[in-house]
Image (cartoon, rainbow, N blue to C red):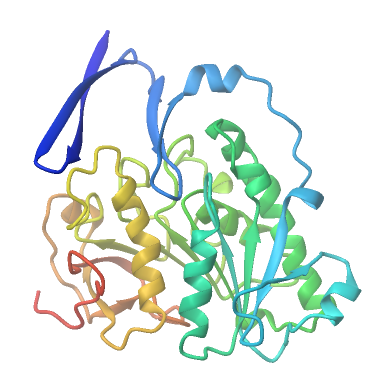
Length: 346
């Protein structure tokens, strides 16, 4: 059995369309045999889940393959490398325990653009933070999505050990730490939160947590409530590349959470998937803010409705709601940046 996908290429004065036939999985199969998955730069990859599962996976050493890149006001463009359990790397860096610390993890096949965007957002308005990018491209930049997905717990536990190192030896106050991740990175920071041994993180933020090959019924293997005192998730491609169901204490569904205005023909959801980190990065400095409405249930949002049951809450921001927001939230955004619309009427 096959199903057809229409792929259209737009050129000046012309539109070229191709019909791509992809094997249709049997109805009893819980996961499709073939799936289109975009990387962090919106490049689409056709993945055969079954064959990828059977392929031998190369060894991945987190001690070598995960790099912690520190950016501060003194070095907003060129990172300093921090190494877990390496006191010399910490002592010779610009890390300042008196500042808030933000640790950000990318997703699959990242080229570093997410790090650049976060660094620009934090330091263009002189935000006095330690921004640490978790660079695990050695494990995530592979054509085999399954390999990258299976490395998420390894990377997450390494991040947790790094957080404990900064608390124990860098005198970092755990109350000043927020972990943020996009797609696969959302599960990295969630699982890291579960494994931090020096206390509970105040907040973990998941930006359109990856859906393919993650199970809602396995909260231990994904970002989930309890990973921090407050867990927030932003869903922009729910049901395709991102999870549909609420995963956090506060779960936000911009524009309903499935597709996003301004993305046009978004065949596999790559554009919508990336909107989550675009919204959050904008929220760090915007004075307009992403105000949202608390809704009665996710089922309502899924049906395009929202019975407002409380006061508006901001989506994103730094440090954000500080745990004040709880439940599921709906909001609308503009079609292009700047996306925030401020306070709106329900």
